[in-house]
Length: 328
Image (cartoon, rainbow, N blue to C red; front, side, top):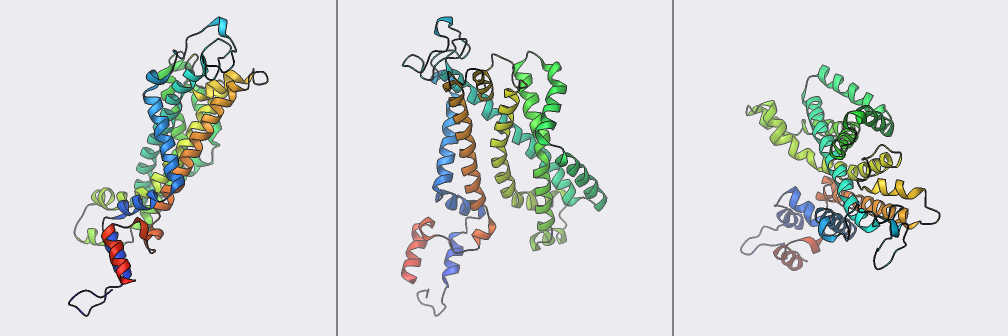
């Protein structure tokens, strides 16, 4: 493209680079906005979060209210998803169970990301002996079967929190988080080791920046992309783990509603009343699929290799699209 009053020709990649001047996160947002599956997954996640947050406003009955005259009632205008063996409204319990599933998924990844970032940064920036020690410990935790480790931790602390739904929930997401942090730790360490060799890190070292400042200001922001993607994929895995624990009787104590608890309660009557298992099962599957689509979209949007390619014109600002059109 030739600029007015000048013989210098501005190549199209330079125009594209101008469009990306907002930085990696803005460019990633543009690419994410063009992924319909990711947007659909994000919409479903936000809808589920809204339903969980405003559960008392959208449920029709108290989730633990029993009606002996309506035991095993099928779906109807009175009970949209039917009732269970105790006459409790299945729709209300499903709505309130979304709180537990989302809480476990998000809080579990909070624990995993916190531990993973701490161990990964310490290993990537520490001395060789510290790096070797932390990675061997991480490998030992990673080699232990995930579900078996979670069952072991929950069983150990189960007696101490017996009868308290809140404490049991805390033990559940802490136990799952203690199992899933090695993936993030190994990922962060690899990112840090790669970024340490970049010129901007060497420049910060020459200018006298401390190791802590380099880690927090220069390395950590550039390593967050893969961590966000991994955490997004980890949320549905945590939701499934909570459902598995509830199914085998290690979940929240009854009558607390959770999607895994609903599947476990309806399993004995699955032959005559499949709706008791079908509704929470589909809810778990839909939410896991939504997070998977969102994770795929974030992975594509935050991939630095995509940023080096020619951007899609339809996602560029109007002024840049006009310049590209004139140059063509």
